[in-house]
Image (cartoon, rainbow, N blue to C red; front, side):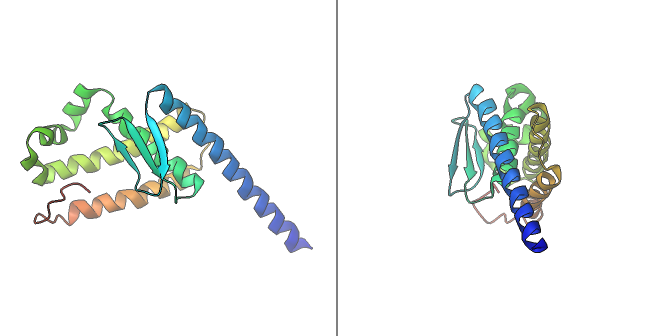
Length: 166
Protein backbone atom coordinates (compact mmCIF):
# COMPACT_ATOMS: atom_id res chain seq x y z
CA UNK A 1 0.00 0.00 0.00
CA UNK A 2 2.72 2.48 1.00
CA UNK A 3 4.89 1.61 -2.02
CA UNK A 4 1.87 2.16 -4.26
CA UNK A 5 1.40 5.59 -2.68
CA UNK A 6 5.09 6.47 -3.29
CA UNK A 7 4.88 5.19 -6.85
CA UNK A 8 1.81 7.34 -7.56
CA UNK A 9 3.47 10.34 -5.94
CA UNK A 10 6.58 9.92 -8.12
CA UNK A 11 4.39 9.58 -11.19
CA UNK A 12 2.50 12.79 -10.32
CA UNK A 13 5.77 14.63 -9.68
CA UNK A 14 7.17 13.47 -13.04
CA UNK A 15 3.98 14.43 -14.86
CA UNK A 16 3.98 17.88 -13.21
CA UNK A 17 7.63 18.42 -14.17
CA UNK A 18 6.90 17.49 -17.79
CA UNK A 19 3.83 19.75 -17.94
CA UNK A 20 5.84 22.66 -16.53
CA UNK A 21 8.61 22.03 -19.04
CA UNK A 22 6.02 22.05 -21.86
CA UNK A 23 4.62 25.40 -20.68
CA UNK A 24 8.15 26.81 -20.36
CA UNK A 25 8.97 25.54 -23.85
CA UNK A 26 5.95 27.46 -25.12
CA UNK A 27 7.26 30.64 -23.43
CA UNK A 28 10.60 30.31 -25.21
CA UNK A 29 8.92 29.53 -28.54
CA UNK A 30 6.76 32.64 -28.13
CA UNK A 31 9.86 34.74 -27.35
CA UNK A 32 11.61 33.32 -30.44
CA UNK A 33 8.60 33.90 -32.71
CA UNK A 34 8.58 37.59 -31.73
CA UNK A 35 12.16 37.74 -33.04
CA UNK A 36 11.21 35.90 -36.23
CA UNK A 37 13.16 32.79 -35.31
CA UNK A 38 11.53 29.68 -36.74
CA UNK A 39 11.72 26.58 -34.58
CA UNK A 40 11.27 22.96 -35.56
CA UNK A 41 11.51 19.72 -33.60
CA UNK A 42 13.07 16.99 -35.70
CA UNK A 43 14.90 13.71 -35.46
CA UNK A 44 18.13 15.65 -35.99
CA UNK A 45 20.94 17.49 -34.21
CA UNK A 46 20.28 20.70 -32.30
CA UNK A 47 21.37 23.81 -34.18
CA UNK A 48 20.86 27.51 -34.75
CA UNK A 49 21.11 28.38 -38.44
CA UNK A 50 22.20 32.00 -38.83
CA UNK A 51 21.44 32.04 -42.57
CA UNK A 52 17.70 31.57 -42.20
CA UNK A 53 17.32 32.48 -38.51
CA UNK A 54 16.01 29.05 -37.57
CA UNK A 55 16.49 26.60 -34.74
CA UNK A 56 16.24 22.82 -34.95
CA UNK A 57 15.74 20.89 -31.70
CA UNK A 58 16.32 17.15 -31.48
CA UNK A 59 12.88 15.70 -30.75
CA UNK A 60 14.43 12.49 -29.37
CA UNK A 61 15.46 14.34 -26.20
CA UNK A 62 13.27 14.48 -23.11
CA UNK A 63 11.01 17.53 -22.91
CA UNK A 64 13.22 18.94 -20.14
CA UNK A 65 16.34 18.60 -22.29
CA UNK A 66 14.53 20.10 -25.29
CA UNK A 67 13.87 23.15 -23.12
CA UNK A 68 17.55 23.35 -22.14
CA UNK A 69 18.81 23.06 -25.71
CA UNK A 70 16.20 25.50 -27.04
CA UNK A 71 17.35 28.06 -24.49
CA UNK A 72 20.95 27.41 -25.54
CA UNK A 73 20.16 27.82 -29.26
CA UNK A 74 18.35 31.08 -28.42
CA UNK A 75 21.58 32.01 -26.64
CA UNK A 76 23.35 31.72 -30.01
CA UNK A 77 20.81 34.13 -31.46
CA UNK A 78 21.53 36.58 -28.63
CA UNK A 79 25.30 36.24 -29.16
CA UNK A 80 24.88 37.02 -32.87
CA UNK A 81 22.06 39.58 -32.63
CA UNK A 82 24.43 42.54 -32.82
CA UNK A 83 26.73 41.84 -35.77
CA UNK A 84 29.41 44.40 -34.89
CA UNK A 85 29.65 43.12 -31.30
CA UNK A 86 29.77 39.54 -32.55
CA UNK A 87 32.56 40.33 -35.01
CA UNK A 88 34.51 42.10 -32.29
CA UNK A 89 34.16 39.39 -29.65
CA UNK A 90 34.40 36.36 -31.95
CA UNK A 91 36.63 37.90 -34.59
CA UNK A 92 38.20 34.57 -35.58
CA UNK A 93 34.81 33.25 -36.67
CA UNK A 94 34.00 36.46 -38.53
CA UNK A 95 37.33 36.35 -40.37
CA UNK A 96 36.83 32.67 -41.25
CA UNK A 97 33.63 33.59 -43.11
CA UNK A 98 35.81 35.46 -45.63
CA UNK A 99 38.98 33.39 -45.45
CA UNK A 100 38.24 29.68 -45.12
CA UNK A 101 41.89 28.91 -44.24
CA UNK A 102 41.38 30.57 -40.85
CA UNK A 103 39.07 27.71 -39.86
CA UNK A 104 42.22 25.60 -39.50
CA UNK A 105 43.51 27.66 -36.57
CA UNK A 106 43.27 27.00 -32.86
CA UNK A 107 42.13 30.61 -32.45
CA UNK A 108 39.08 29.81 -34.59
CA UNK A 109 38.34 26.70 -32.53
CA UNK A 110 38.76 28.64 -29.27
CA UNK A 111 36.30 31.23 -30.59
CA UNK A 112 33.73 28.50 -31.35
CA UNK A 113 34.13 27.04 -27.85
CA UNK A 114 33.85 30.50 -26.28
CA UNK A 115 30.60 31.15 -28.15
CA UNK A 116 29.25 27.80 -26.94
CA UNK A 117 29.93 28.71 -23.31
CA UNK A 118 28.43 32.17 -23.82
CA UNK A 119 25.33 30.71 -25.48
CA UNK A 120 24.68 28.40 -22.53
CA UNK A 121 25.10 31.35 -20.14
CA UNK A 122 22.81 33.59 -22.18
CA UNK A 123 20.23 30.82 -22.46
CA UNK A 124 20.12 30.53 -18.68
CA UNK A 125 19.73 34.32 -18.34
CA UNK A 126 16.91 34.22 -20.90
CA UNK A 127 15.13 31.57 -18.83
CA UNK A 128 15.37 33.80 -15.78
CA UNK A 129 14.08 36.84 -17.73
CA UNK A 130 11.12 34.81 -19.01
CA UNK A 131 10.29 33.68 -15.48
CA UNK A 132 11.07 30.06 -16.21
CA UNK A 133 11.58 28.14 -13.00
CA UNK A 134 13.77 25.54 -14.64
CA UNK A 135 15.79 22.82 -13.01
CA UNK A 136 19.09 24.69 -13.26
CA UNK A 137 21.05 21.66 -12.08
CA UNK A 138 19.70 19.75 -15.09
CA UNK A 139 20.39 22.75 -17.33
CA UNK A 140 24.02 22.83 -16.18
CA UNK A 141 24.27 19.06 -16.56
CA UNK A 142 22.98 19.17 -20.15
CA UNK A 143 25.28 22.11 -20.90
CA UNK A 144 28.31 20.28 -19.52
CA UNK A 145 27.56 17.20 -21.64
CA UNK A 146 27.40 19.29 -24.82
CA UNK A 147 30.35 21.49 -23.85
CA UNK A 148 32.46 18.40 -23.36
CA UNK A 149 32.01 17.50 -27.03
CA UNK A 150 33.35 20.93 -27.97
CA UNK A 151 36.28 20.59 -25.57
CA UNK A 152 37.09 17.20 -27.14
CA UNK A 153 36.82 18.70 -30.63
CA UNK A 154 39.14 21.54 -29.61
CA UNK A 155 41.72 19.27 -27.97
CA UNK A 156 41.72 16.57 -30.64
CA UNK A 157 42.08 18.72 -33.72
CA UNK A 158 42.22 16.54 -36.81
CA UNK A 159 43.73 18.92 -39.32
CA UNK A 160 43.62 16.33 -42.09
CA UNK A 161 39.84 16.35 -42.00
CA UNK A 162 37.83 18.71 -44.17
CA UNK A 163 35.36 19.17 -41.31
CA UNK A 164 36.66 22.15 -39.38
CA UNK A 165 33.39 22.71 -37.55
CA UNK A 166 32.32 20.56 -34.60
